[in-house]
Image (cartoon, rainbow, N blue to C red; front, side):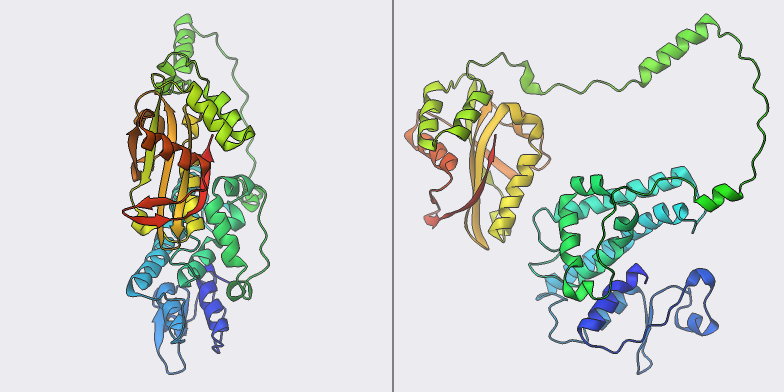
Length: 410
């Protein structure tokens, strides 16, 4: 069926509602009676047993879901409900039209134009990436349980996974892929769709086969003998080719620093291969504060943290985006506390005397506050050792938080 009706059918079946489905294909034309219900001739539309008529997929999905007064699919609070409508609207408005603009011409449902398909697909992938970023730190779109937003959005993304979201794309967008697979395998969803099958390669951006076959072949006129190019023209072509070459990638700002007496890789090997106390002794014996600096890291939005494993994923995502600075940073960051009451702290050693050149390669580094530490101060040294041991509790504002989970950047 149409992707916009998947969530409606899933909720109706889960709530044991007697929902009669009437197949309607606007591409083949709709009846006069249907146009009385939906004047634009679009799908889906709803007519209740009491004669109540409703159009627009979001409105119908919410209405069907609300028939169960005890449902949790519409959230627990007014904010939950608003967020559910937000994601449903976002997907229906920002993702569906662009996905349709990409796959419909390729499969022959709309006139084909290569550039239009490319632009539509680019816009669709950009919109889906917003979901991927959100799902980095959220199991579901709203709250900690599946809601109508998940069912509705998964249904609308089905065309993307059917035509474009291949193996390579899924490896680059692991969060939305994990979420889609999770939602798809929920009984409420899987009961109204076919078995999940991922594609290996995306459909090619080319005219549909039928359009190729129907196009009459035209004999090409014989090519005229090419004339030798003037020297000036050849020189212009060489200049154009040189201009088209991509500019070299800018060097990392920390590359300008002289070679350090302590290779950071050697410390990373010590930390990985030896017991932490022995590795820490080696570090302090070889640490040179003129070449490196130590930093305390605090997450700025601890009051927004929920599940501790999701917070650990948040740290992992931050570390992934620090990849360009891997040669210049070592550190550990952990989540301390319990669900809905946790703190993120960490400690890093950084090449140079400033934090920004090392950390601003990550777009979200401004979500963290960096405070410079002094290795000659016992309390700062003890803090670093505690962070890198990743097992001791911490105390913040007189309250004790036990270590829950953590990540190492090395």
